[in-house]
Image (tube, rainbow, N blue to C red):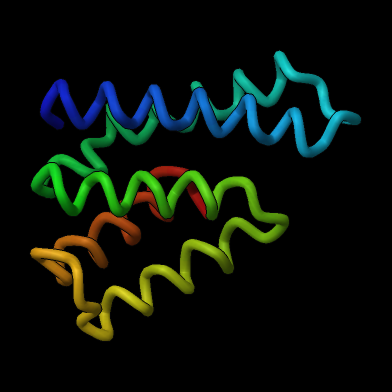
Length: 110
């Protein structure tokens, strides 16, 4: 994974952790931050987004931030995987985007 994609992944996941704690004040902020940090580390180490160009990686990272904050993460990620297999407009490599979601599901064991 290029350093710019990795930087975006960690930065955006950090921002998402902060947003989740603001939306759900009953959760422990340190725990939420740890969860998102661990997820970003696992995805980085697992090379989940390594094959994507910067444009597609930005899209996937944005979608991951939304999906990982949902109540049913597995369904949210599967929905995005199936949408990517339908050849969406706006991405350079729909097959690569679908593969990224498949990698995420495998790496996070969802």
